[in-house]
Image 1: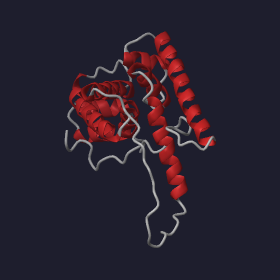
Image 2: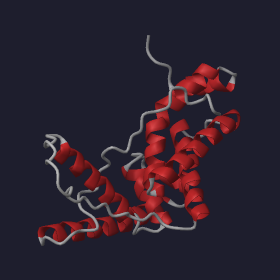
Image 3: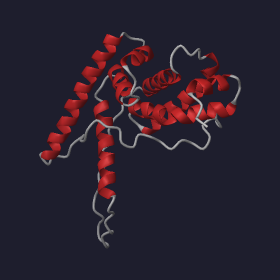
Length: 218
């Protein structure tokens, strides 16, 4: 049996089907969290924004009229929740440096063959967070919705309530800033100077394991 579409799940959830709402939230949770994670720039803020977004999606679903795709509507709520979180904290995301030192004395620990790969993934993630921190909120939201949520320009324009031309401009300028920030990090690394950023603009490890039942606490 083919899984129900978003539209079918929405209709069922609006009719009071709690299981349909649960399936809908599970289906979109990872991408919603990814948007919150990249816009807020921190795990704690992303958790708060994502929780707020999921609650608002659930409570507002009876009023969802279907004029936009459910995913577009949900990402708008997630984006607004993330921007609200940034304003509430009254700060921009910042990269906290992580220093790894050698243990003093004792026997050296056995090398972990997967450590290098994990460190590379963490470094990429931190680099992107730091680079995104250089963007204004408007540019950041547009870039995240395009490159993380994979929305088209019309959908992003609808979410941000700006013309499509403005969306394209923000994405182009935002990507330019990101590229320059990440390039500086690469140059510093090649020069053996401890970088603030490194890596490429990808999104490794941004997905979270969803809670056992997303609707339990809503």
